Length: 417
Image (tube, rainbow, N blue to C red):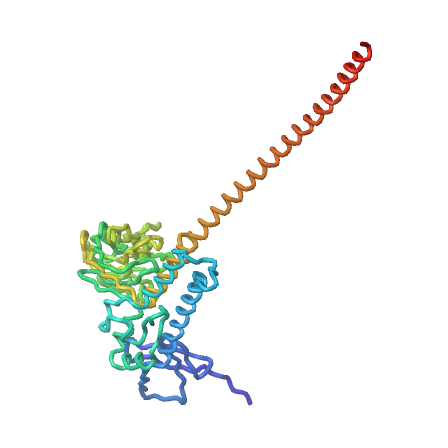
């Protein structure tokens, strides 16, 4: 006798918002980010799972971060050191670019963090000692975390305070802290169209078609006797079944269909029983953050990642108006500041260490070219001198011959006397 295996299944939530999740085992990984649920037995009763903070694991990660920073600082110190006892200098002794890279790491750890109620990383156990190395007091960290986990979290992660109709999304490694005004020059709009205008009641069947960017086609047939409200409700049901992200309502004298998403992400095509599709497009937002032109996607403005002071700073605007809509006061946390310091030093395009290396290599190449050119000139001069020497040898030999001939002539004249 054989039996067929079944996947384990759990239902998350209750009511209309609930959904089922299946697994080939009794474990369900990443139901919530970083959380795995293991079921022991089937149950028709609601079971509440409580997830608590693992402060010890967080402390371990902070310790690992501190160790990595110290390793980098020690490496830089070793490369820039000078021993007065032996007069021995390391390869980068006196190099200001390398020294600034170490200083940036130290400042990332020691500077205040305005977005946290603690203000200073030192109050959470992370500080600098007299030699410039980073220290970590685990007990102090755990005590601060137990007292105010949110304040400790804000010490390490990026965040922002916003005003007006602005919501902070994220920032890149190049973004520097500070408050910036957000100005909208073009408001975002949803893709929207109106059809069946003036048709209060369907008098003959009409086929209405919609096509999504992914190729999904939704076809709805309006039947005789249906009202505009009936057709709108039927379209909405078809949209919901297909997960189209479209909404059908009455408006504009007909049936108004708009995308749920702002901008070009909500584009679609429609055929109001004409036999051909027409494209309906949304409009992406346009504007500036801190005077820097930002790229618009839907309602989100993002400064290009290559910008030197605001790279990657992104906000979402929650109004459809233009002009000044608020501000974002960005504050990178300790971890983000470290990431930015590393990016500033090592970026393959314009990192300070990379640029310094390229500059030194350029000087080496220039000196090598100069040496090669000088060696070539010396070789040519050597060849000219050898030629001149050979000519002088020939001339000297000729003069010696003439001298001998003259001597013999003079001697002959003397004999004649």
